[in-house]
Image (cartoon, rainbow, N blue to C red; front, side, top):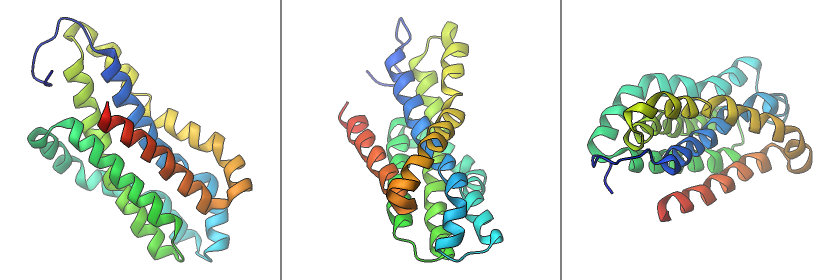
Length: 187
């Protein structure tokens, strides 16, 4: 059923899938703060560069938000969410190979494109799946994406940073997102 065809009841499975995509995107924001001391030490970057590593995702999101919204209107929210997850995967994979601060900042910028894509198109999926009477609840569910994703990453960080290092943490994020993307595209 297309996004524009009216349905008689809210499709909660789509609300859940969109929210899960958002949570996975939010994990990419939350993985940096606990890893920052390790990144600063291992890559020999200063606090200013570390700040850029942590914040470039948000800057890219702020700059590209309107463009992503317009693109979602043209090609569809589901495609933009899938493309956003793909950009997050590419950012995490490339970031795991970074050898300096500039490269890590560039890979985090790629992740920023993915984050804004999911952040803009996810709510469109939610609204398209929900009946007007359920908009408040459906968007309320969606709104957990950043705090839930950040919390998951921050809870997992000490275990992953100790066991596989920051690179392994980045690659583990890429693996989780890859599994999700395959499921998202096939489902």
